Length: 196
Image (cartoon, rainbow, N blue to C red; front, side, top):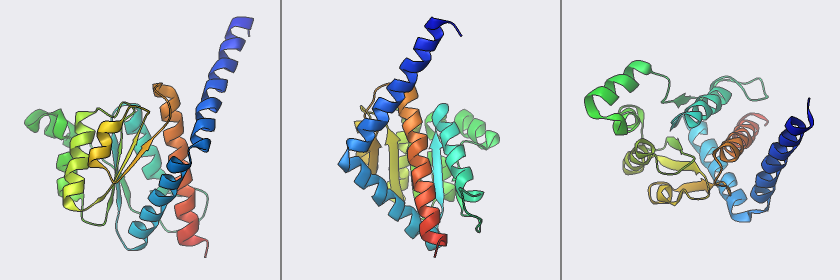
């Protein structure tokens, strides 16, 4: 490894740590993560489900987090109902073609969401029209709405009960914190529902 690439690696790791340190110091955000965990425990403990959605890297995060619930996080346990609305290519392309891409998640929320479920919309920018519309539809249907976004994602606050804004405007750093938050909620939910 040459000196230049070594310096860049160290710099990127330090940037990631810095954002996580800011996350750690944000008492309001930490409180919201605890509140979201309580909503997951309440919903999943009473037979409801979690629906997750986003675009690009946020689509991957949706699938990753859903898998933690349906499979397992760390404990051997029964599976929990969580679904990423990003995985059905026929639904995504059909809805996108027939109704416009803005509707690819909201149409699925209309079909699959019920009052008491949790809808998790992930958008690093906070401006994704399909995420905003899906959370608005979920809110109107009585789902608990959760948004994961970055420093400037305030548009999502209007359509979500909980808006977890990572204190960064850099997409990679925001996404790193989103999966950290997903892991925290997964572990705490699993522990609360099954450790006893």
